[in-house]
Image 1 (cartoon, rainbow, N blue to C red):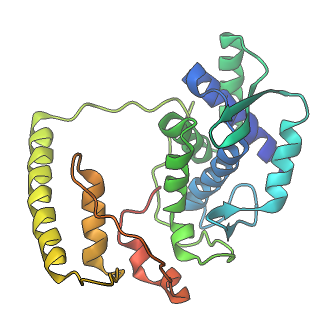
Image 2 (cartoon, rainbow, N blue to C red):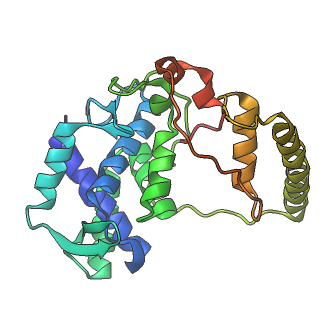
Length: 268
């Protein structure tokens, strides 16, 4: 595990967050650990499965993890080089971290310096994730859990980075500047609306079939493509009621390596 490089990724992540604005300039330990993972993933795509940091990632609990990395990040964040703030919520207290420096010009200069010192793909991956998710822990974790190494592994197994789909490489120069996107055309908007209309029709038909086949006493939810497709479509539609049920679900150990986990688009 390259600790010096990880320290650079840590400072770079917080410099990107500071550039994004006050509302998301403070990140937590879990955000920073997952950003290191995304940097490793992006780097491995372009380097035949070799990660940038050498962290031995494993599928632990619900996501990519390494105990030594976590302890190292905690120690680095406690050195006094970063500003610490305790926050509270209904879930309890938590800690957020930010750069100690608050001058925008100094932050911008340091950001560019760090950006030039890191591989383009790793820096870009961190910048995209911070820009897209900020402090939105739930969606960041959802994105990370859907990456290829995670979908290939079962709990407590090492994550493999070989054979990944190749992603785009940032151009020379400053690689991690916030990406811009063009607004959709009228044709694209029309197609999106038509796809949405067809989805609603399809959902209603599929749900009707399910409703007619539902047992009176016991409901059994099979992990088949039809059921997953229904739930996916429901999640995309506003104002449509999702069926509710209670009970105990047993998941066979063999499902971790089946194609069911890869029915949806794989996150980058």
